[in-house]
Amino acid sequence: FVSGQAERRRAGEAIDLAIRSRDGALLGATGLRVFRPERESCEIGYWVAADTRGRGVAPRAVRMLADWALTSLPVTRIELTPDVENRASHRVAEKAGFELTPERRETFAKGRHWEFLVYALDGRG
Image (cartoon, rainbow, N blue to C red; front, side, top):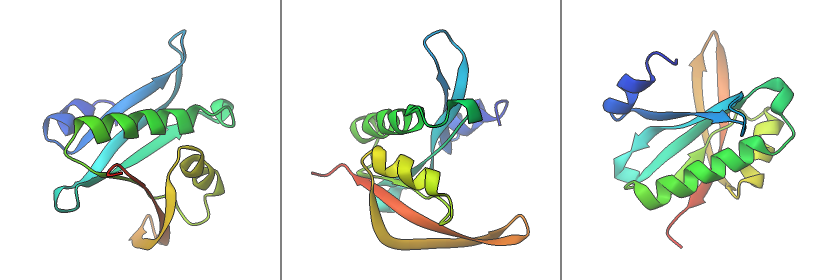
């Protein structure tokens, strides 16, 4: 993941960033990916270290990246797509100001069926 991030950025596939504390400790990561030019949208992904969870780090990082993307990139919509069962990620999306949409996405990966909710932040208004 780390060694390939520069190439993904150059190829326009992703922008991956570390989430660090003021003293430089790694707290997690966030990034933009799944750019859909026809929809003027992209997705944000993130993770935070177990001992960092519950401190508001993920919602702050997600919102900062979303605000930057909406003002700096040719996108008008940012999406978060958590697994339907991942309640912690649902809370992150809500705390970061994203709204649950009626959309659902599905895939088959890692030997199982996955269903994702779609939360969106619309930068048009």
